[in-house]
Amino acid sequence: ASQSKRSILPSDIAEFENALEGGRMAEAASKIMENLQALEKACLDIAVTGESGSGKSSFVNAIRGLGDEDNGSALTGVVETTKVPTPYSHPRHPNVTVWDLPGIGTPEFQPSTYLEQVNFSRYDFFILIASERFKSNHARLACEIQRLGKHFYFVRSKVDADLDASKKRRPRAYNEEAILTQIRNNCQECLVAEKVVAPQVFLLSSWELNKYDFMKLEETLEKELPKHKRHAFLLALPNISLGILEKKKKTLQKQVWKLATISCVVATAPIPGLSVVCDVTILIRSLSEYCQNFGLDKESLTKLAEKVNKPVEELKEVIRSPLAKEISKDLVVKMLTKAAGGALMVLEYLASTIPVFGSMAAGGISYATTYHMLQSFLNEVAADAQNVLIKAFDARHKKCGSQHSSEESQDREIRMWLV
Image (tube, one colour):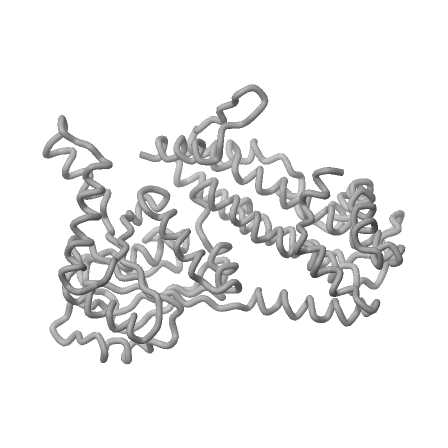
């Protein structure tokens, strides 16, 4: 019961109470559906630019969870391969598009005309990439973007190559953190010299996206994006850390009560043997999307297994939820029946919190059952995704008594294995 209560946020209760006001459930459901569709269709357009050879295209691929040789990847090379703004849709979230823009290091480059040529207004924010030092071209473009009222972020790419070179030159004096600090300071000094105010530089490697400053970049974008864009951004992130998995779980949790409402209001026939009315089609779709968002579908697991050079069956061994292995109408109906017991606790809690809820009778039971099932499966699939990530990189949960090690320490463990 306590778990069910913890999963229902105060903001959920307030929204649900407003939806039920006046007993106009069908009208409320229609508005909720519009809200969900708007969230699902929210477009996010990310512009990636920089000088020729800086790793723009590799970053475009990495941020979409692809390698340079995967189907649908951006063309990469040692010379400029992008002549016009080229859109690359996310393979699982087509509303998220990463644009590979032409390089800015050409003699004819001018910030004002460049932005007009690439259709400046189309993009939500800009990533400015350099593989060595940032130059006047980067600074001039950043100032123009800022003048026109949009966000930009400096990314220093290929830091893994710098670290490797430093280690080979001075193996005994090698200090990774000191070298990264030196690179970051040098980049900032170059930008300040070009009149950029308080530049923030993120150090990345497209080959090892989980390392260095990617999480700092992710957190900055998450904080500065509008709410509906933030939702699209978080779900489209590659599953490279426990922190990202946890954020995906939280953003999906915010939609559970809405899905439960829609699922039950649009229902047309009861499930045999259960006094609950649910739209199983909506449930199947939601559960399938959960699996894809957490990388537990067949394609994602296969790609991860190839990346870490392990049999895919070895990764599947740590998946516990039956719905993460197979999603069918019969299995969903079976799981709904199982969920009915836990739903009574949700129903009791909501009825005591929202007076009008208790008068909904069968509708209330239907809502609570669907809510409990979605919430339970989301918890299960998020835990499975964490176990798969840990298993993939042979990092182990450390325990102190009955408590697992913190998410941050587990992430550090995974990074150690990835080095």
